[in-house]
Image (cartoon, rainbow, N blue to C red; front, side):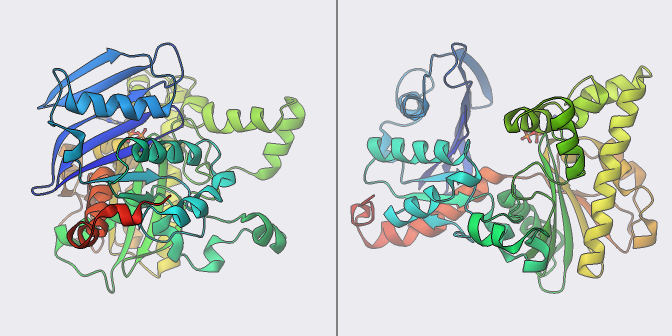
Amino acid sequence: MKILVLNCGSSSIKYALYNMDDKSVITSGGIEKIGSPDSFIKIKVNDKKVKKDEPIPEHTRGVQFIFELLTTGEYAVLESVNEINAVGHRMVHGGEKFNQSVVITDDVMRDFSACNDLAPLHNPANIKGINAVKALLPNVPQVGVFDTAFHQTMPDYAYMYALPYELYSKYGVRRYGFHGTSHRYVSQRVLEYLGREAEGTKIITCHIGNGASIAAVKDGKCIDTSMGLTPLEGLIMGTRSGDIDAGAVTFLMDKLNLDTKGISNLLNKQSGLVGVSELSNDFRDILAGIAVGNDKARLAKEMYTYRIKKYIGQYAAAMGGVDIILFTGGAGENQWEVREGATNGLEFLGVKMDVARNRSCRATEAVISADDSKVTVCVIPTDEELMIATDTLALVEDILDKTEYSDYSEY
Ligand code: ADP
C-alpha cells in the first residue's frame, strides 16, 4: 500500500511517499517559493538530497510536477502514478466542523471551504492541492487530516475568549489551536514509549519549532492549547510575538500608523526571537550570539524559555498535576538549552532533570529526567507526515477492500 502525503502551504508543497507495509518513506521533498521566479524543489531519495530550480507558477502545476518527478527521470520511484493507493493531506483550519480525519467528499470540501475565513492563506492552498490530485488521479481516495482537530476536545471555558458572546456565534472567534497532528502523535507515542496508559495520565506536550505551541493532554484528550484563533497566540516563536496585551496592539497601530495587514506583519513576521534579538529567528543563531556576548540574544533566549515554563505551570494547574512533560519540534528535539531553560526551577512540581541526559539528547526518543523524578520529562521527535499517512491508511483500507473508490469521489 503506497500513500502520498501532501502538505500544501500558501507558497510551498511538501510531499512524502510512504510504503505503508513497513511505514518507510520511499521519497520526500518539497517545492518552495511557488509563484515567485526563484521557486525551487528539494528532493530526497535514498538519503541523497538534491535541490533544483524549477519555475512553479501555482499549486496545480506543483502537484503535477511532483507526480512527474515520482514517475519519470532520474528520481523516479514509481512505474506509474496508479501505484499510489491514496493521498493524505495536511489541512490547516477545520474550525468546529472537523474533530477527526476524514475521507474527502463533496460535503467535506463544502464544510472545509466554509472555514476559509479562519485561515485565508492556508485553507485555499489545501483546496488547490486536493483539486489538483483529483484532476490527475480521479479514482484515488483522498483524506484530510486537520491541524485543529485534536484540540476540539477542549472544554468551552478553555476555548472561549472573554469577548461579547455573539462574536463567537457569528464569526466563530474562539481558540482552535494548531499543530494538532504533532501534539496527537507525540502524546500517543510517549505513552507507547513509556508503556503507560492514556487513561489517568496528564501530559504536557511542548512543540517548539519555528512555530511553537504547547498542549495539555489529559486521559489522551487535549484540554487546552496555547495557539488560538490563529497561530499567533501563546509561546514566543521564531518570528511571532505570542501572547501580548491587545492594548499594545492598538497602541502600535496608532503610533506606527499601521493597518491590519501592517500590524499582522509586525506581530507574525518581525517579532519573537528575531524581533527581540535583532539577530535571527533561528535558535542556533541566538545561541551563537550569546556565545559572543550579545545581550539581546541572551534576553531573547530567556524570554523564550520563561514563556514555555509559565505555560507548563498553567497546564499543570489546569490538569491538577502533570505526569509527563515532552519536547518536540526542531528546537525542542535538538536544543538542550531550550529544554533546560524551560524546566529549570520546576522542582516544586516534581520535575528533576538529569542534566547529562538532557544535554546529550538530540533528536531521539529519550527520557531526560532523573530516575527518581516524579514527572517524567522526555524528548519525542514528531512525525506529522507519518501520522497523516497512518490516518489515511486507516480510513481508506475499508474503501479499497470493499469497493471501487469512484463511488466516493463525486466532488
Ligand atoms: P518549523 O516550525 O518551520 O517546522 P522546525 O521544527 O524546523 O521549524 O524548528 C526550527 C527551530 O528548530 C530553529 O530555531 C532551529 O534552531 C531549531 N532546529 C531545527 N533543526 C535543528 C537541528 N538539526 N539542530 C539544532 N537546532 C535545530
